[in-house]
Image (cartoon, rainbow, N blue to C red; front, top):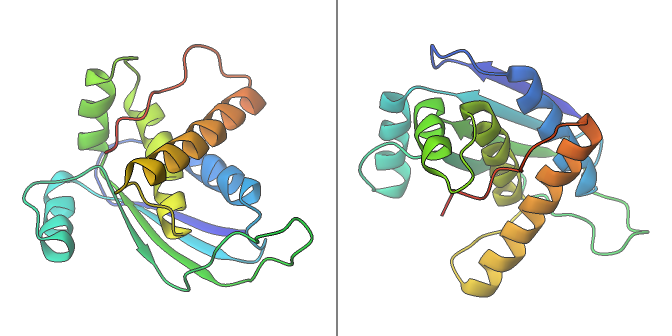
Length: 165
């Protein structure tokens, strides 16, 4: 996997954890190992500009995904996954910090950024949460990936509950 993490936010974030959980999520979803992903961490002003430009919604948001080759996980275990450019995930640590603090299971900004990274990967792979059944599938998969990664890393404590909507 070629994954680039570029922090342009001015906020110190755990870039290695973002890289690790993105790699874990892509492997778990059986995405071709030569596929490429970019993760960009921006401040609230930059995120607000993107949110207005692409979603026509005011204010900064937590995560945005910009797919490129519209890669999808293979439908069967024996199918060869396609290779390509997944796209870009944009994260905002200021929004992540606020969401983590306000979540039912309060957690750190970095834990929220890890959750949002998985959320962004799933969006790049075509998952959505507009309808209740889509939301249940996406958030269930998101929780399984985050919990699996945390268990593999030996991280203790409650897993961050989904705070993205």
